[in-house]
Image (tube, rainbow, N blue to C red):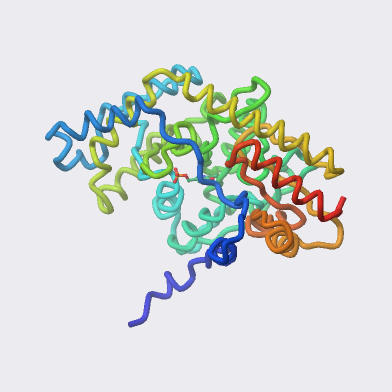
Length: 387
Ligand SMILES: Cc1ncc(COP(=O)(O)O)c(C=O)c1O
């Protein structure tokens, strides 16, 4: 039986080959230090697990959820945005509950774009953005995120033709894979740009909680007028180590939120209510677990960046997220270098070109193992005498 032409067009998972190589190496009994993936290594805080247990014991949670999700979680999202960012969100009209933000990001182009419409995507960027474009039958152009611009887009460098044609744009700060952050001024410029060219903006705020050096990442919605042009997607996966729970939400522009709820009415019957109640408990409960998590990542970042600088590998320290974005030494492509580290040092990293052509020349390291393993990885790399 043949699959549809549309499914045939879906991008092949760039990283599946890498995952296979790493798994093979592990199966050979090698002690691989895997810095290649983005799966948080810490457990979900116990009070959130407890909230799930309690909720799951209540038969009310065993029924279908309302189609667009529980109002308790929408209220919690609204309360969270008020507390964290000083932003007013109408829980009834400005929140959509998502099966993790991956789902939201992939389904959104189908909500807003017609066949052939143009979408703007960051390069390098999270690979799943492309899947949504293909499923919508839309087209995309990329804009580069360059080191000399602190990995922020240069809106002036986007051609007038593309600015006029584009209907939708994705942004993501703190950024995967570069670890860059964006400030309020940047988001204000984004609102002006989007209004001028009538482009809807989705800010993927997956690493919204993870900012270093005492700087809390800025929400797009803090910029005046942001709700006129876009939404933000927030996941609980990273903030509370809940990647396996599959829960997130979108907040902002009422029409876009309505369109998400409409498509989801046809696709799902929202999430398991007990998960929604536990997610609400996470958002409204004590946030000291998040502070502890951010300081854990910051310590790892400091340890790792200091260690690589000591071996002569010069790299910028990420300002947020749990990724470090490192230039590859001369003479290697990203992929060659990633393969070399796996073969010669038993260290797995993600080659930058998997995130787009402007990722070439970099590798991405996930700071998702403890400090002693990070130091061990750097020591193994030191022994290769590359720097
Ligand atoms: C940039 C970015 N956006 C979105 C996601 C998706 O997160 P989730 O589907 O767990 O909410 C990820 C996950 O790694 C990510 O790195």
